[in-house]
Length: 171
Image (tube, rainbow, N blue to C red):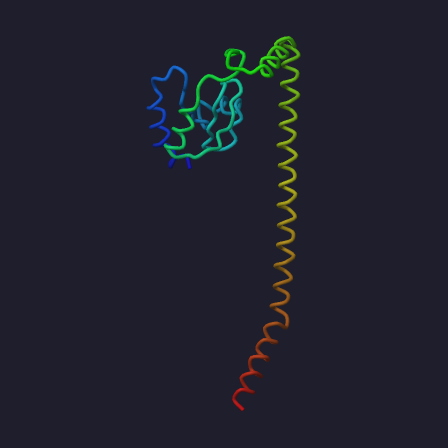
């Protein structure tokens, strides 16, 4: 996927190189960018993130140049503490509430919510591993049962049936 998308991504980066509001860049998560990728939650490659640098979101759209360009054309400043004028009343109220909490309380809430996300991921991984184990056990049981039937009397039964059918048709 990475190699297929690279030419379109490079073309997109070039088309936004002079933008003052949109940054299109790439990071090598296997080398120098490893810590940044870990920090922003990159789990697979290629990953595309967008939004506020301190709260990036996953891009889920198309991976060809036209889809990427159409999405990037809609990017720009968004509601946040640095752009309050872009926020509706509810978001402004939420930003005020978060600001009033103070740094220590915000850090505690961030940790609590990140821990909750990590638990969801861990629980899901455990669930999938359990499903995989069940699948492997059932596959083994089925294969053994199929083998027992085939190595048992099924082959001989079919041979006798075919022979008898052929013998009767020759009469």
